[in-house]
Image (cartoon, rainbow, N blue to C red):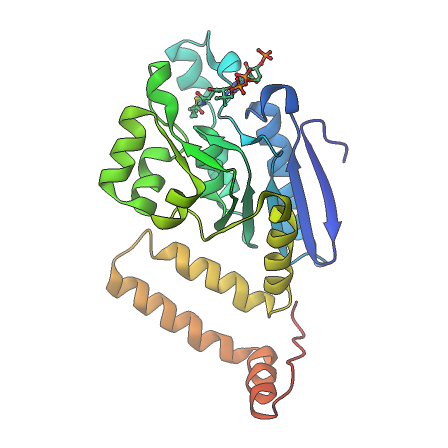
Length: 257
Ligand code: CO8
């Protein structure tokens, strides 16, 4: 499929998706959403792919939802069009997606990065929820996901003052998993994705599901869910192979990848 606002390439078992609206700093409009959903769903269904990396440009991962697209809309337009509710579909992709963030990740850009499974940041990354400066509030999950990532005090600070957080602060408060030099960002993210893709795919997908479950349920329910899933992995030959390889001091050769 030909895309206009993203590019897509396959590196081994990893799908690399790059946001590509340079003139608008990768601002997220309806077309970006539908192309991103088409690309991630295609990779999710592709048996040759086990993980994905989503990145932007050196200057911007994404500078937010497209302000010019939203600007003249009425409440009725927003309500009847249910603008951007489609992003929920992005969070239902089952294979892991790493966000590789350089430059600005603002508003919807920060929210999109948080919808991925983890964030690797370049030392140039800047995160923010500046919607308050536009007379609105985050609308793609920022007030909810950012609070779960970094806690109330910092989330309030970001959402109420609209200030940006640099990569070091983002790592310190748990928004990103690691910070790497800007020139190595995509390679490092691909390396992490390739590592994930070398493991048993059902185990990887269930690990993603289990961690995500922790955001949506009680500790007791989450622990029960984890244990059931853990037990179920003993139905796969990859569990036998992984544990046999450990005992025999060799590399495992997982079948379900
Ligand atoms: N939307 C549309 N266009 C944008 C956006 C955006 N979010 N961000 C940048 N652009 C455009 C600029 O208008 C400019 O275009 P042009 O050259 O035609 O004037 C081009 O990108 C380059 O931008 P700048 O000249 O401003 O570049 P600078 O380096 O001077 O500044 C900044 C970079 C600081 C990132 C600046 O562009 C900026 O502040 N951008 C807006 C950031 C922002 O406020 N983001 C939040 C948007 S609102 C949002 O995301 C809500 C999400 C929830 C929606 C849910 C709906 C239900």
